[in-house]
Amino acid sequence: MKIRNVYLIIIGFSIALMACRKNVLDKKPLDVLTEENVWTDVNLGRAYVNQLYASLPGGIERDLDGATEIEDGNKQSTRTYAVGEVTAVNSPFSSSWETYSVIARINKFLENFNPPDAEQEEIDGLKGEALFLRAFFYRELNDLFGGVPIVEKVQSLDEDLVVSRSTYDDCVEFILTDLDQAAEFLPDPADAEVGRANKGAALALKSRVLLYAASPLHNPGNDPAKWQRASDAALAVIDGGFGYALYPNYNELFLNDNNEEVIFDIQYQFPFRTTSNDYTLNPQGLNGAFGNSRPTQNLVDRYEMANGKQITDPTSGYDPNNPYENRDERFYGTVLYNGVEWRGIEIETFFDGAFGPGVNDTYSTGAHMTGYYLRKFLNQNEDTNPIIFQDNRADQNWILIRYAEILLNYAEAQLALGNENTAREYINMVRARANQPDLPASVTGAALQERYVNERTIELAFEEQHYFDIRRWKLAPELHAGTIYKMEIENDNGNFIYSIGEMEERIWNDSYYYLPIPQEEIDKNENLSQNEGY
Image (cartoon, rainbow, N blue to C red; front, side, top):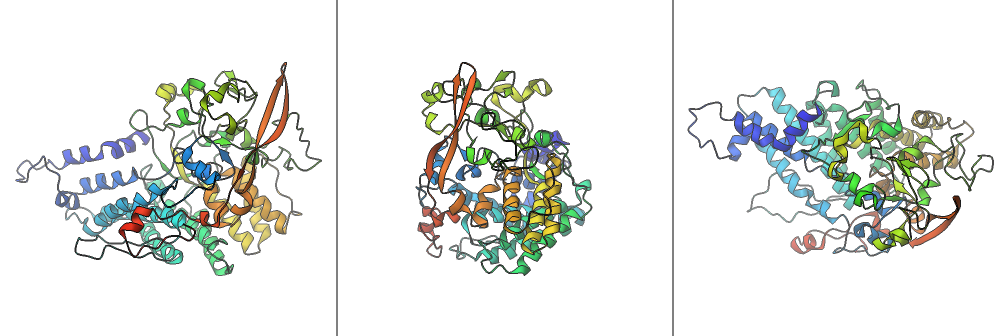
């Protein structure tokens, strides 16, 4: 199924063009693809929608979480946040605004696609996919930029193209309308093709949209009605009978494509469509890899001991001289650390170690080495799939929405509504997959809220959730700003001396809750207002 869908996305138009040649008496030029052909031929319409999937954002290449306290790397784009240099002409993710070109294509499809010989169910299904994708792209724009222009129809040259921004809440309602209609049109996951939008994905995205809208950044009055909508949306997925479940092994979750936890993802298949994960993430210098997206000590310290106690608890058993023993399983599935075996070699992140500062100062990044590399998303065992390692390219799918997020969404909404026992129950479901003990009933109030924040951070780290989470919670001034820590390691004849050191002081400006509108767009549209602080 996976290979089939990758072919559909990569060469869909070629297949569809062949399909349109069934009638050899057709007098239209058969080597010319016109819009009229697309809107009246269901095969071409499907190929058109296939191409829309190729514009989905995500992957470690974009690396939103690089603009948070859990990561440090040598990407100049995300370092603009670290040093406080984000401007309207120097913004790391400003290209996201180009999503409007994809939205224009979706609008054109929704207005024009109506093949006369196709079954209505098939027409509605493709329009449902387009509506889902439009909602997905608008959700990204709304949360990145904070209230954006809503363009829901094809604009002609004689129309007023200088559209004003809508409010954040108005954008939310527009997105929800698209998702509700998409959910009506789309099949259940069991009946849908792998990699394509389905009813479960539409409801899951609705859960994310409403949770973000209920959060402190967008709900300063803490309106309980907003939290109730978020709770209901998450529960609709949980109780929807879609067959979603937590995959038993967190460490293998991101390598076993299309498993029961995946709700929506981007499909990859070697050699047609691959990621640069291996080249980007592997320890710096290993087969020419860059070693980007390095976890910080700030993140590592969040991982509990296997007994469920935080490392700051004097009864936890944490040993600063052996800091990586008996930790939460998710630590081992996320982080490469000094002494761990990786692809047949021992990772050395101590000073002058093979992958540590000193040796790698030649890359001009030694000052920003944290003592860690990212393990998540990488396949350790070459024997399981040799093609993954060819040319430093990988082909595992990139998960955009998974079931653990929905469980945490529900827990967060229940927590905000004052239902601590229910919230704790759903947090514990996620913890149980990692064999972490349940949070006890004695953890309540602010302490339970803190444990939830911690749980969501480590569970979803580097999945482009934390960037939005610390902003919508309004915790970014506390978490993003201040000191970023690293692990400094000395090798004393095989005995390692570990000490936590300061890497740098990060800067936070309140303007960073949103990206700046690209200055070139402001210059072109007199009705487009800039975000405050830019």
